[in-house]
Image 1 (cartoon, helix red, strand yellow):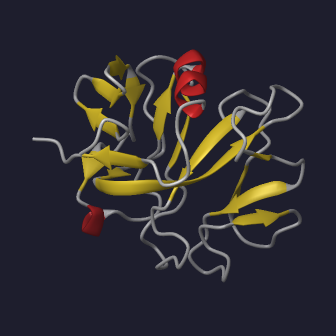
Image 2 (tube, one colour; image 1 turned 90 degrees about the horizontal axis):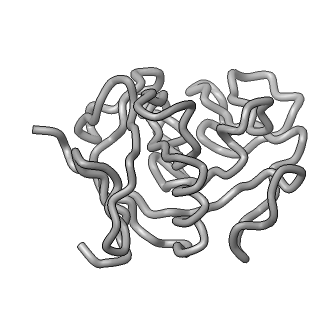
Length: 169
């Protein structure tokens, strides 16, 4: 590991000498080969950060490589879709997650390379870093932080920064 890695530990997310409270999936942390779509688990492993998305109507661009989330932007989570685990646009005939949400949870989204770009159907989609609903509230498999901490981290990462998630136990 390097000082620029984001490391999920039982104490929180460690980055640049600081530890930030974070939450993981309601299914806990699972071995990467056990991860399945809809299991609510966060896959263990080393995941590279490959994208940053933000709501330009709610915040300034957090980093030079961040891309705006548009009103029609979705993320496909349907293993039957040829665009499974990719950014797609409405209308979209397969199951998906809306990126432009009414709540602030996806105002800033950092995308990992979990099962991306050549997704294996059913292995799980969209492992993001995003804002938590509230402290301690689990995610659907992502890693979530407070808004303030997420923004601090976003300003200090770059494409290829690694998210290291260790198996529990």
